[in-house]
Structures are given as C-alpha cells and as structure tokens.
Image (cartoon, rainbow, N blue to C red; front, side, top):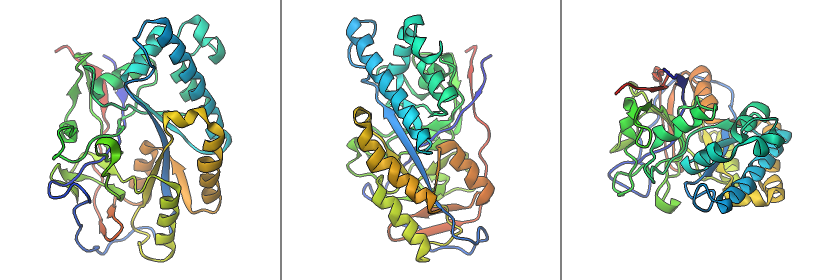
Length: 341
C-alpha cells in the first residue's frame, strides 16, 4: 500500500452571489495574537493541462517539455536566491511527460533526478497538485502521478471553481472523504486545503483574505468549526493588493486576531522573462518581507501557522467586512493510497 500525506488549496462561493462573497456577520470577540502580524503571502505557478505542447510521445512534445523544464529550473534557482518560497502546481500532462522523457540524457543536468525531484529536493520548491479535471484525469490522478515521480505528499487542492452556479463548478465538498482516481482508479486521495477560489477565466474571482472552513457549497464564506477542509483567501492577486492588506493591519482596520492572506500567480508565460519576474515580483516581496510586513510561505505551511499561531481562529476578510470566530482546528491528516477496489 502506498501512503502519503497531502495538502490542498482552493476556494468556493455562495449560491446567492457569483460576484462577491456572502457578507459575513459582524466580528466576534476573540482571543489571539496581540501584536500586528504580517500578511501571509504565497507565490505559486500553475502548469496547465495543455503543457507541454504537442502529442505526448512525439519529438515536438519532447522538445517543448525540455524547454519548459529548463524554465522551471531557472525559476526554481532564482526564487530561493531571493529568499522567496515558490510553489509549483502541475496538472497531469507535464507529469505524464516527465514519466516519458526523464531519461538518462534528460536527467544528466539534474544529478540523475527527475526535474520534480530536483526542484523539491535540491531547490526546495514546494509541489502541490493542480487539476482542471479534463482529459480523463482528476485531482486524485494528479496526486498519484506526483507520487510516482517521488514528489507526492501534498493535500493542497491547487485551484478550483468555487461558484456552484457555473457548469464548471468543482464540487469541492466531495473531498470531505477520500476520492478515487479516474485515469488510475485504484488510487485514492483526499485533499484538505483549498486555494484559488476561481471562476472560469478568472473574470469574477472573489476578493477575500483569511482562513476558514467552508460550511457548504452554498455557504462557502461561512466558517464551520467542525469542517475538515480549510480555505485560503487569495485577495487581489497582485503586489498592490498585498500592500493594501499590510495597511489594513497598520491602520487598525483589521484586528491582529485575523490572519490575512494573499497569493501571487507567476504564470507559465512569465517564466520566459525571469528578469521581469525578479524586478516586478520577487524584489517587491523581498522588500516587504524585510520590513516585517509580510511572511512568505507555502499553502501547507500557512495552514500550520494558522493552527499554531492563530489557534485555528477563522477569519473571512473582504474589502468591506471582517468576520472572526474562535474555533478548534479539525484538519485530519490526509493520505493517498492504492485501493484493492
């Protein structure tokens, strides 16, 4: 039996509105940190299910994979040099490509390791599953492919459609229990950390910061103290939004008992211009961190911090409201395994 711990990230929405989170009730009196905390920021990249280009097994696909591989290594080297943690969240196609192409010739530049092991074990890149659940692959299949490549262990759900009014709704509630694979039906996985909270094309994503346990698909922004899935708010997805959150702390608009969160997506296309990533993303983040205004982290570590420093106190912060509730964390360890089903 194969066994690994997993982490997830994602988001969801309320049934009543697809344009903004359900307005929380007024803040509740709580106990928690008394000093102004930093904003917790995650930097990540999604590799979509159309990469690498071309049909798997063809020379064109191998060439495209080799180019993307080189870019990932360069980004993986640059981020730690700047002191910025980076999370890579690949979909199924690049993982199947790695299984095909990571041969002796390909791994010569990475000490005999496949690129994902090299990124994780040598460059300290965090690797989580990401899935649009197309092409016959679901999240469990992606988590299983990561295990086959020896980089499994995350329970992050690396993005999802949170609004049940969309046909593409991801039905995140199914992860209350373990889910079987589609391409690999003997694999079983359960994620417990949602990040992303997206809409199709990211045209109507909610602006929300904080950590909470969604009650249901129709009450996504209401915390359920007994819930076994945590959600992480991404806020505005840009540097200006991160600065805005730090100012909300310093002005007293948001109490120190509320853990504020934000994420920034380094797109695959931007990996071809790492100079711009350095100047426009990594350098500003490093400056904010050096001033003590933010803490750079990954999604799994963020949840650990939420439990240990904030006592698992749920907080949902929108541009106009803040809802805080003291709760007891209930995030059981998740596993992926092979089933005899």
